[in-house]
Length: 261
Image (cartoon, rainbow, N blue to C red; front, top):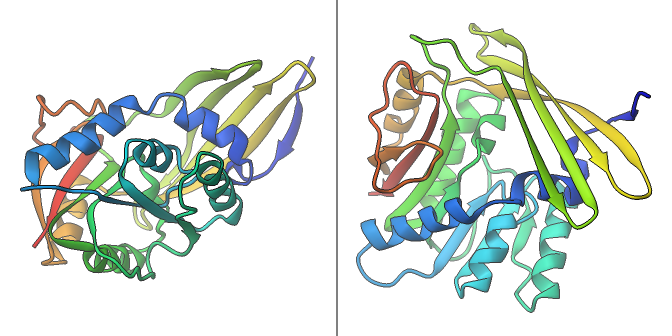
């Protein structure tokens, strides 16, 4: 029997989004803290996440004793994030803002954007605006860990991905698939669906993601356009600090370790 289907933004359903993308964040947390240990001299404590969503990483960093804050464009996600932080005795440190145009009062030691959210920025101007805002937000010598899914030019790009997550009696099967790529306008469209199952209801949320595409040379040019940032090392989405990678024309999932000059 077909599932009841609603066509809405996955970002407007933070409870389900948090389960889908937050079920296993141990590797990302270890990577963030490991980068601080490896690349920063002395103590670091202030962490900042642009496009923090439901705050899955902010919560665990706060629980470990870091001062963690973030921003997101979606008010429902920010409310979810702050409610969880408050529930566990931490400051409500997420706020609503555009990651290409924001200011914060105190500079951060480490900033991170690990799961491709950067590609929601629709143009070169907004991408450059984001790097400029981040340069103001991170202290000299501090780090920005930027995860991007590149478009390979000498290999077929990955076009489907499926995974499952469970929390108690709630389970979600997620499927993401490629729909269209416009290389001239640098737009990629992906379908994404959550198949949600609980004791009281089973239904599907359908959505479409529009992401700006980046080849390796395009990403290099963007980073080089802002002299505040230097690439220290690059890794893949396995987040293994013992296995840095060299980004080439076949690379897809890349985390750039950028240092504020």
